[in-house]
Length: 134
Image (cartoon, rainbow, N blue to C red; front, side, top):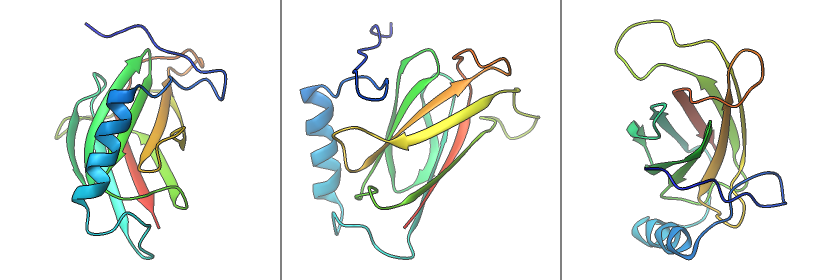
């Protein structure tokens, strides 16, 4: 069972819990460097239920509420460029129609916040692909 979204007044993102902050710090400590490495590309493929299917540099994915996700990386991604698209979590098929937005995760330098919508702009669970370029 998913907890109710913990919305923050800053940008509509859920508030970072102390447990999530500890997880983010632990992921950075496991990395060789906590700073962005120029020329590095990380990615994640995430299912509509928030499961991390595969990725490079991606540590975990979390689903907060309707269409709200966080992807945690093993490096600092604050000065990176983010590219996200509605994708598929299967080895075939056309992904569902929809829209997606991406932003730095509040108070978490190694995470990205993703919001997915249906084709009418209503928040909806959608699988997605995310690339992070430094």
